[in-house]
Structure formats: C-alpha cells, structure tokens
Amino acid sequence: MKFPTPQNLALAFQRELNAELEPAQILEIIQLNAAETNPNVCHSHDFCDANEVMLAAWEAETGEPCEYDANCERTAATMNEAWSLAKAAEFADPDKLETPFTDARA
Image 1 (spheres, rainbow, N blue to C red):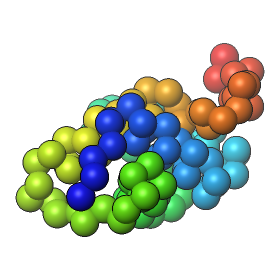
Image 2 (cartoon, helix red, strand yellow):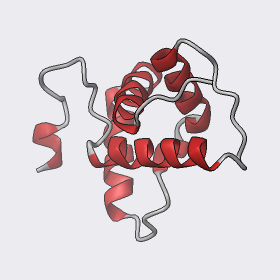
Image 3 (cartoon, rainbow, N blue to C red):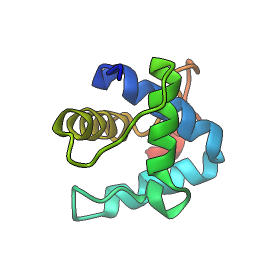
Image 4 (tube, helix red, strand yellow):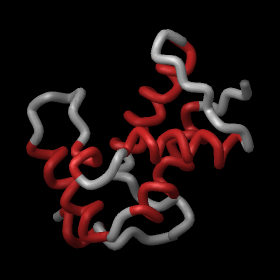
C-alpha cells in the first residue's frame, strides 16, 4: 500500500470535503470547531461521513484505495496528522486562491 505524506493527504482531504459539501456547510464546520472544547472532535462528521471522505482523499492522492486497518499505526498516524492539518487550514480548498470564508471568519 502506498502512503501519502500527511501534508499531501490533508490537501486531498480539503479538496474532497469541498467537493462533498456546500461552502455554507464548511463555514458552519469552522464555527462549530471553533466553539468545540474537545480538540479531538471535528464537526465535519455532522455533515457527512468524513471518514469516507478521508478514504477517498487517500485514493485520490495515491491512486490506490486505502486498506484501512485501525491497528496499523502508520495509517492512523498519517490520517490523524492530515486531519489536524486540514482542520488548522479550516478545510480551505487548496485549488482556489481565495477562500469564501475569509470575511465570514472575522
């Protein structure tokens, strides 16, 4: 199985999530995450099966489906780091120069 870098997987996840959801939903995720007190919670799960979106991102990045095994520390660590990076980037679509959320976040 091929392994993407966490950085590339995060970008692929951001692309996939933006393809799956409407901009207003992404904005709501950002707002809910900002108010969330548990750092391990991501409200993207409120709007879609974000785990499936991550698996699609893995396949988009590597060209192979992820043979996910929760016991595989390398897979879990790569996905967790990618998720953290994407969340920190507020799930901005990396293919767009400007994000529609810039003004709404202020």
